[in-house]
Amino acid sequence: MAGGESERHRDLKQRAAGWAERAGFAILGEEVRLPGSPFRADLAACRRPRSGSADPGESAVFECKQARPDLRKDANAEAATRQRLSNLLSRQRRLESLLARHLPNLRHGETLFPEYDSLDLDGFQHGPIHKVRREAEALSRRLYGGTKFDRIVRYRSADFCYLVLTEELAAGYAPPQGWGLLVVEGDGLRLERRPIHLEAGPVRRLALLVSIARKAARGVRN
Image 1 (cartoon, helix red, strand yellow):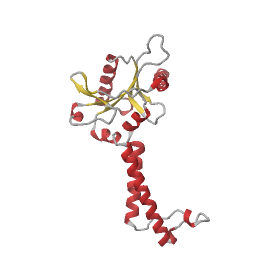
Image 2 (spheres, rainbow, N blue to C red):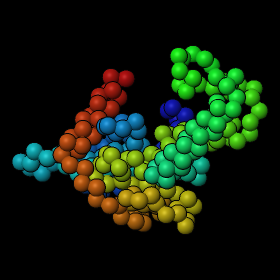
Image 3 (tube, rainbow, N blue to C red):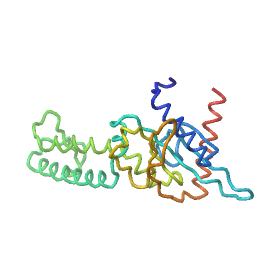
């Protein structure tokens, strides 16, 4: 298994590739970087352009999940997470302002103006401020590393986005907004929910096609 990939995850990607080809996505690539984003897709695919058309064919991305923790990690809602983080950071600033006012000895003293000094809270026992800081750090990690599904749709990385799940994971699961759902059935996949057509447009379609080609070229060189 290259790169430590499990057999189960590999099987989901192969099923997704077979389904994509049958759906008319003839150009495929695995572990493809999505243009304009920090993400890679388990599988990216493009339809061939119509004869005489300058617009690349429609595109699709497939994310394959074999375990619930991995699924939850990428499925956090971006807007709600961002709002909660903003609220926490506002609370953190208020608490730090109060501490700086009542305990000026905590200031670092690195600037000419006390109001711009940072606070040295190492070793300072103040439960609320440390709790807020820990929660803000955790939410920040979640926002920038755990909202993959929401952000792929918002960036319109492809015309269609599909989540590929085992039957066990799909039971009672509602896919993120915009995503379609493909579920393991027999030797293939069944379309459980259709995705929203995101209208990626010719520029994004071409960028994804180039990304697939680059990944294929690297594979040939290796």
